Amino acid sequence: MPITTLDQLQPLQKTDRIKKIQTVSLVLLFIAGIINFLDRGSLSIANQAIRGDLGLSATEFGVLLSAFSLSYGIAQLPSGILLDRFGPRIVLGGGLFFWSLMQALAGSVNSFSHFIMLRVGLGIGEAPFMPSGVKVISDWFHPKERGVPVGIFNSSTTLGQAFAPPILVALLLAFGWRTMFVMIGVAGILIALCWCVWYRNRERFPLTAEERQYLDASEKPRNVTRLTFREWGSLFKRRTVWGMILGFSGVNYTGWLYLSWLPGYLQAERGLSLANTGWVAAIPFLFGSIGMLVNGMVADRLAKKGYSLIKSRKALICFGLVCSAACTLLVVQSTSTSMAVAFISLALFFIHFAGTSAWGLVQVMAPSRMVASVSSIQNFGSFICASFAPIVTGWVVDTTHSFNLALVICSCVTFAGALSYFFIVKDPIEEPAVA
Image (cartoon, rainbow, N blue to C red; front, side, top):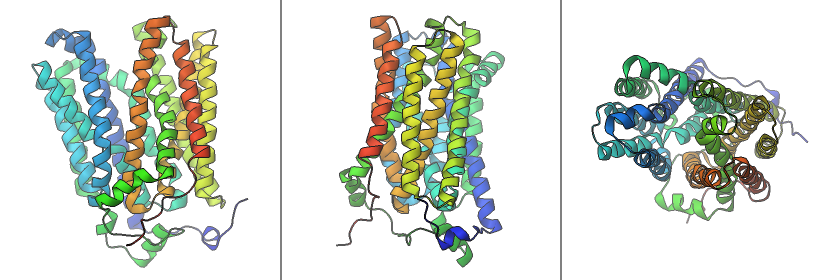
């Protein structure tokens, strides 16, 4: 049953300054998200051109791909505590500048070892992006208005995945792969400079009483002390944190499987040509973006009706995960390409529907000064699980010459994620007791 409070009965009031900060922050995060996935996709798109130019084998090219993913996953852990201690202005601004610089310098590489170092740098630089977005929205949006902003921010990633093939192919054909890398890197550097100039950390921004009332409504008083390394380490002892890691693994495993193998599935299993695969593969990721936006609107509507922020987000997560698992199973049963693409689109719609509420759950389960740390720990742990998706799928395809078993495994992992959120994620993460 929804609980009606005095805060709910009064319309939420925010000043023009708060509106400006929200708009500027969200626009810059959205653009940075698209650039983020253009950077990630550039190597795959330029596969043949880079291998031919540098004389790389398929195995060496695979090492380049893994160098990014491994460094990105490991760098999640320090990025969280850095964000909670120093704020998104410096950490995200520095990360965005650094990863864009690595991307631009990749246009001048002449050796395999040089390329590996730049890919590792790219992964380290990109690590703070997702936790930064979650923290920015937690800091500058009312608790009952965070659903849509999280959906918009999160949708930039799937839109980046959808737009990357046509944009990058056009740049590659027009200017070559080296210039393509430089152009994307320069674009990111410009966004990094805009972020540092226009964004301000909430802790260093002078707020009026009216602005504080809007931002802090329905929340406990904020603890503004910096997170200590001891407090950060104590997060690994929390049942809720481990439940969120295991649950979000169901989200990331599905996302990474389709991101890594969707083009290969369409060509090998469904017989599509390379030219048609690029456009057809964009459809499911567009559905993923829609799922994020729909979740944001539903989450905010439930919050404004008075439903518990924790229980409503958990319900949306579990619903999305179960539906995505079912749709992935239906892909196996599809008798035509159009039917398979339809079920894959629904699987990504629901997985990103669930994922958006999963990021929103962090904001209401963790104290505000721990949001970035919990976000990065969740992303790190789930990324370790998700990293097996491409490997397991490749082994299954080599062994069975079919994607069917890989899709069944994916469905099971997704459903297990729902069980984790339902049974393990229970209590909010409280502030450590003062000694």
